[in-house]
Image (cartoon, rainbow, N blue to C red; front, side, top):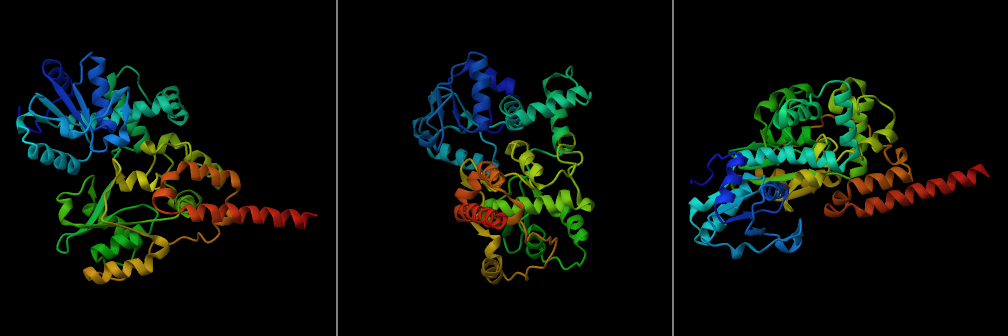
Length: 385
């Protein structure tokens, strides 16, 4: 066996049946492999993860410390989505003097993890079940096409033939910097400044930059200074609605999930619908920022700034790497976003994007908006007397 040999999942299962096996990685890919092995009544002799203390027990199996691995295991499956993380794990195992021929990582296993996300979503989310049911009723989803065909059809219905992975980067390879694209957070301006784009028409930058976008993980990531910016989830979601739904000229959700968001039914209905969509199925314009910026609990970037402090924080990056000023692009009027929320919407958005609020330090904004709305209600009740 050679490291990173392109094995099908069935081949991996066969290897597991014939040999003493271990899984390194207790995320979604690891869960997928573990369940596949268990379905075939194959015993996993060890399941480990770098964050084993946080993982605790998964499917009744205690996740162990990677230090327990050794050459007594014939197959050690690296079960992670990220190629960068995969390489780090491989290096760790080789430093532990584990023979490289025992280390297995499969592209097929990584692709099949997307199927696991879809099927897991089907079980867990009423939204997903509704979309699948509507697709079957309207005969847009065949049920006699086999497992792979079924999954591919679902991906097309949801993602318009795009990959589930919405991660993308824009780089200046000479300066060795990389901007992580976070939609609805001044990304057009940040792309332009990172790439030193000097055009004038906003449409041109999206057309030109599409050719230079790096999807998925960034090659040689460790040699780049990686940065991104995040935004208050409340104003970000309002901006998404105004720019992509309310503004008819820029509507982009007419085909997404059978038109689930294609019709403008007001901001409140948009919030309710978006909050019913799990991150794994969400378009990147409204998926949680934590879901995009973090992978397996690890930040993809060296620096995460806030759009609310953009002028100050960009100046430091600009001066360090001799970049251009941020051009004003793709601007929309979001000044009234506070008045567009009520208390019910606030709690829905907080629950949906809780990790954004906690991880990126927006809890104060959450409390302030609640206080603002309550005070507004109080004043209106006094005026009605």
